[in-house]
Image (cartoon, rainbow over all chains, first blue to last red; front, top):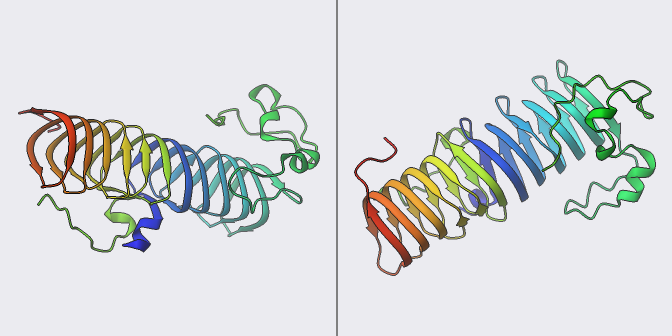
Length: 158
Length: 118
């Protein structure tokens, strides 16, 4: 019961739109369009998530589109990720699709999950998500030296 | 009644589940049972909804089966509604079948509806 109460699951067939905060562990097997703050996020093989994620650990087996800030990201073989990811550690399984802006976040403090991240440090090293507006997508990315290829279907945080 | 006390262990296929410290703002719709322990500001549309005693819902609920142990503020539309002893309900209930346990705190308008969500 307690164990059940601490876990959040969006099951297959469920749809959610909005914001989710303070979720410890969340599993997404349905269709979610949200801004999410959590300790651990799992996007299941059939799960679809779009929106911003801030989490300690994100395991992606399904589809993700949006801006992700995570301590660790594990993209399994079935993962399809687009948008932008900032991470400290990244694991990719063979077959994972990463079509996104990837930033190794050397200085960002992703351990503090409740919105008190030192933004100054992040901005000093990487372009902030807000700078990558739809109009600026051709702009050369100073980190990777590549142009953004991603079409501008990215959802901005609500 | 109405599958309250359904405490069997749950896997992902059994339905959606919103944990206790979780706060959600927005709309949720589910084709499988939905069990809430956390707080939701927004509308819910699901086949079966169980609002546990730790849960709070501010918004309208649309379901076939609804069990309330927690707090609900809004318009509830369901074929079968069960308000348990710990339920707190403010708003309106539109239902075909209604069950209220002794001790429930209710301030609501009740309407019996013949035709609901199918």
